[in-house]
Length: 338
Length: 280
Image 1 (cartoon, rainbow over the protein chains, first blue to last red):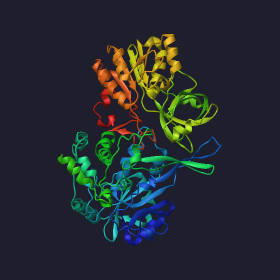
Image 2 (cartoon, chains in turn brown, blue):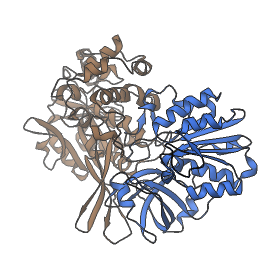
Image 3 (tube, rainbow over the protein chains, first blue to last red):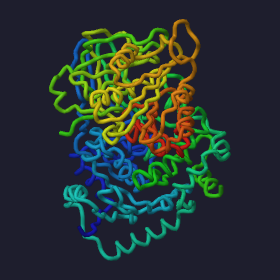
Image 4 (cartoon, each protein chain N blue to C red):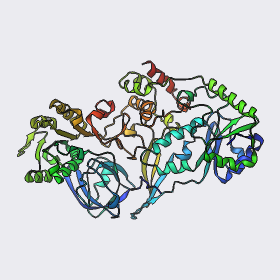
């Protein structure tokens, strides 16, 4: 499908058209930007660098029920994971790419019905990073791009008073069809303007890391003193993993209230000491040193060795939000130099 | 619709007994599926595991301690350690719990046909070895000599005591048993399992060694097997880690880039020898 144009004045109408879907867009409340279901197009806050909380929570909720049960009743009540046809409007290319990467794990051998159902019914309308990306962004070092379309169904580029609309999948075509009355054909100049912004955005990324050979090198640094050094300040708060768009680890817990209960899964973090604690009391990753080493190795060595992609999209949330300024690029730089 | 791997099957306890006494007692459950139709699709191999638990309490991963040659029931031998196992230990014959699986890889017993087999177990580590031994006993003609080496702290701490007696009586294989410390009327070896292994000194010729037990024991058994001339490709062991999903999603059970739940729990020694985290 050829590129289209959506005039910004008609953005409200466009979001209105999409209200037949479960429509989520970035919203701002105090200093926190996160994706929420919007009823009024005015709630959409598109003038943002990136959301505080990644949109992974739309397909992978922080807590979700797997099944319910009742005391004295042997049958378990399976939870239908469907949330209905969903559109996420205006997410960043790195966060869409993260979903494409994590989906490989949720498809690995055993299909995860909860994740995959919602991923299947969710259409991703991305918003290219056409303003200068945030100071810590490093998507281009890990296989991404500020205008990348991996995982996306539609890519929007902000051209000032209008958006260039690029459909990149069949799911995206369905959304474009719903908006067809609002879209005009793009002119050559619009495409040229977008291409120029794309080049500028790429140049605007100031932080980089060489990832070649990291997968093997990390395995050879198992006992290197750098792990102690880079984890010394860590509080074990887990924000680096909770707010990471590729972190997918979860816990499973049962909750009972009176004679009803549910088995639920919830985000977990490899930075917590209970994460690997055995019933016997033994813990194979007893300190933050081992846990930090595992977090970095998982993202840059283990996951790539299994699924081909680095499990990091360079969104820099872990850098921007760490309360003690632990910087994954600094850690990787030490690995490169070790 | 695809089968939801998180939904467990209900099983009924047809028999249960204590293997060992004490704080960390071991109880064996013999179970059958509440819905008999599950048997039509269920198939497991020696060494595979299942998530075992109770709604409202939780679930944990355990090896299936029965061999697929034992039809119409599954066995689990469970040590009382934490929340789930304490709840499991309150269950009696006629009651139910839930399982899902089978998970993980298995001991490649069919590749071992024609070979001599030696199993080296310690404590509850005999549970994953039991299906291997039973499988060989039920296909006795397909395998060579079978040696069973097993020890625990005291004779009371031995799992599957009655079975060892029966095996000895039938002459299916040689049972070499040990206790860690001297006790009255103990007719067998006194000492740790790795020392018993050196005492038995099995030949590595055309032999497969399988070892499960506490990590410290496994470490010394591996060392001693190498000393006896076994190559890493002749040695199999199992790893364990905390697990939640058992299907390679929840993240925590990895040793290096291997997920114990899916890539294991059975590993040939050469596969994990150089994985630093496998001894953590």
